[in-house]
Amino acid sequence: ETVTEHPGHVLVYSPEHRQPKWTAHLVTPDVVTGNLARVDTFLNDPLVPANGNYFDDYWFSGYDRGHLVPSADLRWSRDAMTATYYYSNISPQKPELNRGAWAELEDWVRRTVRYGGGRVYIVTGPVLEDGLPVLETPKATHQVRIPTRFFKVLADLDGPEPKGIAFLMENGLNDHPVISYAVPIDSVERLTGIDFLAAVDDAVEDRIEAQRDPKVWYHEGDPFFGEMEPIPPPLPRGMFNTVQAKHHIGNVATICGTVVSTRRTAKANALYLNMDRMHPHQDFYVTVWDHNGPNFSYDPETYLQDRKVCVTGKITVYDGIPRISVNNESEIMLWEEVEH
Image 1 (cartoon, rainbow, N blue to C red):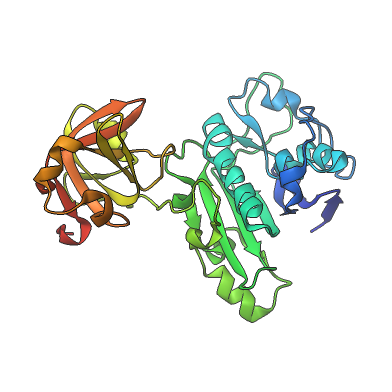
Image 2 (image 1 turned 90 degrees about the vertical axis):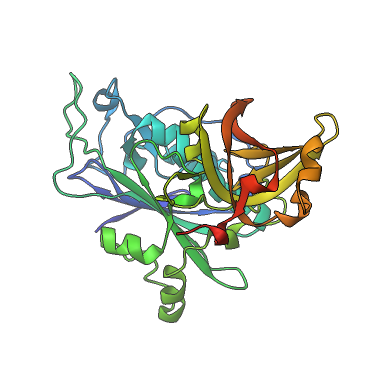
């Protein structure tokens, strides 16, 4: 395989699929201070002869030109940013992915660098397989293949305790929080046949490639610090996780998740229990009106903090976020009391 080096990133290109097999770059604290504007002009890669101008292949194809190395990761250097707009760094991504969960994942990476203060090694790529469909437009001529999945591998080798994690997403809608798509690095290696950390000491490599704990990547100051993964389905009959709550608006249902933060407002005379994600990023929350406080034998604000619970009631919406208003403690069950 030929490794092509550009300012800010390297890549291996797949002529058969008309896109990179993988890209690698470092996200450094410079990402915090870099303020260069986007280039927004896609270019042929002068160092990859098999790479072409795929404008006609993408135009009205229904797919975005998805960056594997995000330009925002390299906004400290004009040359490095420009190189991210080479078609050798582009794969077909559905808008639901590119502008949704994938963009959120890229932001997640930058936050861990910003608030952690260290650098993170990143390898990104499509899952390339035989028989992938091609972009079809009236002027398409290059047979650009459409991956069904994408991966991003992270390794922090500079910190006091080296760590690793990977993410795997479908090329479409991924509507759970980013951390729900975390997987061990070695699972992506088995899927792709790529050895991502070949230069790392074997003992360290084996240890970090088996990890998939998103919590160790958060740092104080990160507005998402403390978020939890929604309980993966299937849940017990009649129960749903916090992401699924939006599909049951107007109905009585039981929603399960972890109380990650509480918020009391005198103006509303209410206590809010944010489940799985903190305000204002929560997918679902519980309201306990002050006048219902005497109906509890415990203080919900302190007793339920950091506990996994299931809440039953009618799901309504306020400011676009599903919620349940509870009247008494019988409508809240601890997860360990649920029959699994």
